Image (cartoon, rainbow, N blue to C red):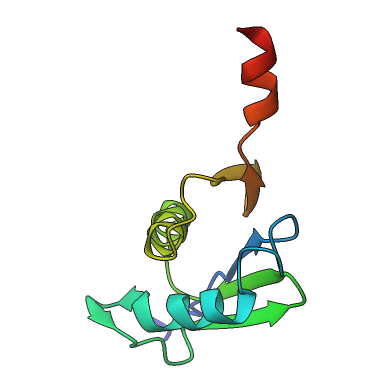
Length: 116
């Protein structure tokens, strides 16, 4: 039987967290990037990113590139935890806009008051 070489293709995933609306006003994007860098777990260890997970910042967006299986829901969890840590969870919410993108939006408080 001839030797068959298996080629393993690593899928890369790209996730984006868009902080455009509250950037500069409420949310410090650099602090959020550092928070993610310090809190993301790889192989059940914190700050074990290596070359598997790359976090970068582009103005008011945070881009996470991974070569390992990674959950988008985990990013939402960490984002909500960061908002709670900064005590701004009451003003912002995390909304999925596309398959690989989350966006921070303000709650629509004015609309609910006019309906009552």
